[in-house]
Amino acid sequence: MKDIFWKQTQAMLPGVLAIFALLGSMQFLTTAAMASEQAVAQEKNPPGDIPDSQVFVAYHSPLGFSLKVPEGWARTDRGDGAMFADKYNALDVALSSASAAPTTTSVTDHEAALLVTNGRAVKIAQVKSVKLRSGPAILIVYSSNSEPNPVTNRQLRLENNRYLIYRGGKLAAINLSAPLGADNVDQWKLISNSFQWR
Image (cartoon, rainbow, N blue to C red; front, side):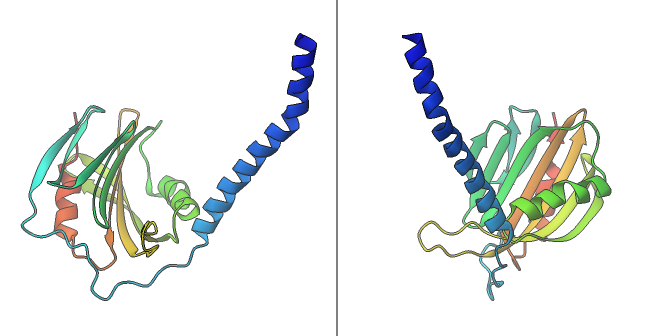
């Protein structure tokens, strides 16, 4: 009986391996297609300004950090952090392990390069050191296409600020995005400066 099972398993193995190879190549093709995607045009009157009257509330993560987020934005919790979104505006915070604090060179070579490879028509504008209230950070300023709208398939051109903040073997990545041309400078400054390790 074991011999029959073993022979059947061996006969199925090439087909199973072929399926995995196909799935792997599909993932590669999807990533390559996203990276080679053409940048969509900037909106003339971009939606997405966070109003000056927006109320911010403190979010305390069980992962050991806190920051202020716009009240009323939809929250999605993940194992590595959380995302807050309202239409095309988004605030994403993710934690990962890191052996050392990032530098402008390491971020240019790694994180920024991965954004270009894995993102939607990503164009890096700047990688620089900045000082937040929580301490030093590296800021990546870049533009990208949004995910296609599930109903209309429409995309917007987005502007993004990604802050990388390190402490004791942990790296927090805070990504703020909005339609390109939206005026969120003060609000993004408030959010990024509110980040604290707990």
